[in-house]
Image (cartoon, rainbow, N blue to C red; front, top):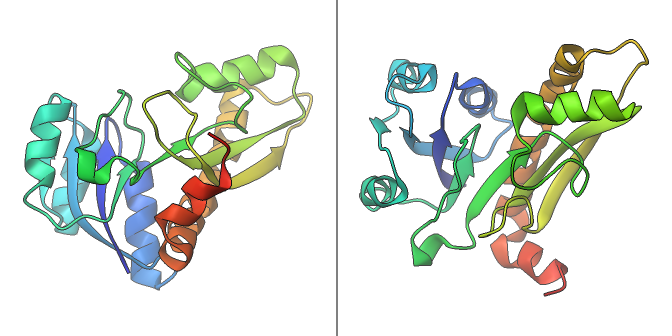
Length: 193
């Protein structure tokens, strides 16, 4: 069972999903701690309600100081809108979810609604999400799981976001379960340097 830390910047919808999946027994993980880089993030309030240790920390150094007090196998970036630099011991143990099928609509500046607007503007008929290990470059670490969603001509960026988030709710727990089963090194060895 994975021991995870959750880093978030907003409402904590992914935290809600993790908490629900753990409760149902469909996610083989335990949430050790939740940290936000936004002092009044709704996700921190939710974490406290769920009974998880929850902290505000503005930067990487402060976040890592908190994490060192917990046993953590994986750090989950769950709507964390900042480039995170983990401590060396966890450098290959950070997992992110991105709201597109990487490599499309990814990289610096592509996050959240910006991705969905770009997908709509391009006229795409398929989008989706990618769960991947994070590296020092935005959206370039090894891919763990991808889920696609079909789009309609009439979809707005908001309806695309809704469809993609539904896929994210399946993909992130599935990815964590795969990492639990196969180990971290399996995924890093799959990609070419």
